[in-house]
Amino acid sequence: MPKAKPGLYALYLRKSRADIDKERLGEFETLAKHEQELTALAKRDGYALDVPYYKELVSGERIADRHEFQKMMRKVSNGDYAGIIVHSVSRLGRGDPMEYGWILFVLKSSRTVIVTPTKVYDPNDPDDARFLQMEMFVSNMELGNIRSRLVSGCRASARNGCFIKSRPPYGYDRAKIDGMWTLVPNDDAPTVRMVFAKAASGVTLGETARDMNASGLRTPSGGFWSSSRLHSIVTNPHYMGMIRYGYYHREKVPVDGFETKIVQTLNEDCIMVKGKHEAIVSEDVWRKANDNCRRHSSAKVKRGKHLKNPLAGLLVCRKCGKAMIRFVNTCQSNGNKIEHYRHPPFTDCKARGANMALVVSILCDALEEIAENLDAAIPLGDEPRADELESVERQLAVESNRLDKLMELYFADAITIDEFKSRRDASEDLVRELKAKAKELGRKRKTPAELAVTVRDAIGMLRDDSISADAKNAALKQFIERIEYDNLTERQRDQDIRLFVTLKEL
Ligand SMILES: [Zn+2]
Image 1 (spheres, rainbow, N blue to C red):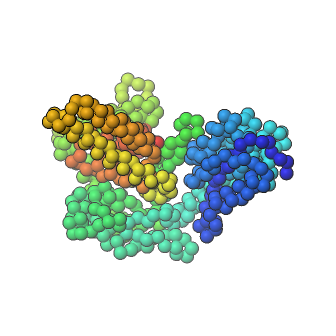
Image 2 (cartoon, protein in one colour; image 1 turned 120 degrees about the vertical axis):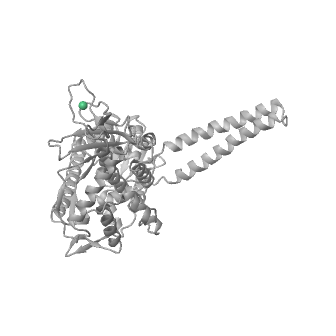
Image 3 (cartoon, rainbow, N blue to C red; image 1 turned 60 degrees about the vertical axis):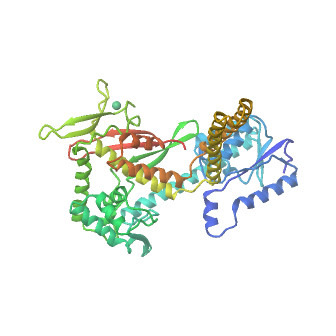
């Protein structure tokens, strides 16, 4: 092996998807193993390692998900390193061709070599460059294959009526029968049946939730039942024995360079088939319950409550990006007021409008699924920041109290003006510092679990008549960047409204 050039070397560690699977089977912790191996290599061959090492704790294939990698590449492009030490080339780039093209370009222009236990690659050497390109290309192909195999496998199972999501709906357990995943009603099934029976007989979900809470029933996580929670039960087709798969489509789209955003859409062409599992309610009861829920939710407005626009500043036309306008129609036959969203007039773009209650209810469904996805997401491992932020905020509260006290002391002539000034200045400095710290900590992303709570709170608010549109709007703006609206309805009876929710980078 040729001795590499002198200078500082970066050590990059990242788990691959395969490592995670192996670890699940009891394999040794991969990163620790690689770290040991690579530091021994550096020692043996005389590479000076920069500390700290770049240790990727999350398993992302895309550069946007790999913050340590971004950090390292910034230094690489500054020419800070003679080389990168890595377990294999595929650890660097396994994203799409655009990404590994960029990686190679940066390495080449900064004359940075790649050191692996088997070979040292110099991107400026034509043979090595070809080799690197091949390795990254092949691992990208493999990844593509794995992904498409996974997805097509899932769709095929769903079409066969299997339940392939990780979380069963309330009232069911997931079980493997004859080698296939399906649902089996559990002890909560009677509660589900009761909810449907009440909804079908015209009791509102809010009333049912209040009754359930009063009689001591709690959600699986020990919380109170809400109409929003019950709504997600009543509208879930699994309970009448169906399998719905691919209704919510979540994908990452690039926004700026390697930054991505998650976009969620409702897919009306999703798989909807008879499931292998036992229904908890009959189709007839399910439909009655759903019809009643829809009637109740549109009755909200008919009771004459003047909701303003809860989606102000969020809902825009998907085609032209213009804000959708809230509009109140008066029904000619009975004088009831009905709220609508309309496309702004005098443009080339003509999107059909829609009933506000319907749009809000579709949004609630989409948010419910986002919350569920967040529940299943892997935490990023920076929870300690929440504690730190809390203590900084506590300290801030103490300090602002202290300022008030100083004023009191001064006005009570207990301290001189000079004393007051110097103590106030010291306190104000500290407050400034604390505020800066809180801002820095606050900017750190929320954990998926925290975000899920925020999302569910917002759903609860959206479905609660007694909450003002302003408050709903503020709750949504905490985590939603934009909601794009598209209406593909052809016949009035079959409303086909699609919302594309873009979450804020949190
Ligand atoms: Zn438009």
